Image (cartoon, rainbow, N blue to C red):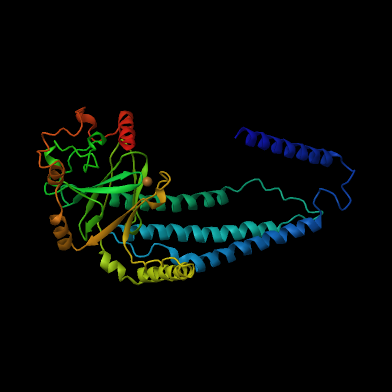
Length: 396
Ligand SMILES: [Cu+2]
């Protein structure tokens, strides 16, 4: 590291000396101003630069069109949540606005550089200011940006506002850790039992406080099942570092922060089965399978196993670089019709039963999971001490 810094300093020093000698040459008036090697731009230099400016704006346009044609189909496709349409239209409006404004302003910028390039004998026209012009080019961005921000705020409150009274919401806790996800359903009572990283033991991998009556009917799972058409409220917790719960198909993302509970709610609108029949999704899947079959042919030629064909599934991904296996931190999400979802949920074991069974039928109330350092105020919060406790757990 030190040698790298020394090299950087030497390089910068070299550049500084080189620039200083250039300035010194420029200050030697009359010595070299009139020959071909002069550092002062002549008409030919100005013409070359003017045309290059013009060519560059052409390059920007051609590259923009090329990108749209070549990669335009890689966008996310049909949104699978209630707020997704609104989110997508906000994105589309912003992108079209940026696209239009940049197309016009880039043209003006480069065209003016070309049109008013330097010419021998030309002098600059002195123009102090024009209040009217300045007013116009200030007020237009103000109005446009204010509109965008207001629309964005409106969309955001629509997504984030959760009316506990009115909605028959499903409460799900999403627990992040290096490098995977776990989920817990609130069970019949609709209330998630308290949890703390200190209670992690055996199959109780999310640290649920088994002495809490609300925790008994909670249901833990490794695949996230969601009912179509019902509001789902997610409570996010992290065991170790900062993660981010990213549901691309539902247009939702929330930071998962150690030491606090964050939340987000959305209503799934398309079941997994229906999404597999969505034309845009079918295009994507066949595109992926084309790439896979080419790859498989290469593998078979090398005498290795071919790849399985890909079928679509919703995913929960981690979107914060949280460590070495961050890229593979994902969980399958299955959206079902509400009746199918309820059937699945009924088939799951409650945490009370599961923990009892794993302890050989003992009453979980009599088996202290971890010696009680029971501070009601920070039941769901991890502290620095907790981090040490986790580190010890992991080492075990
Ligand atoms: Cu992560």
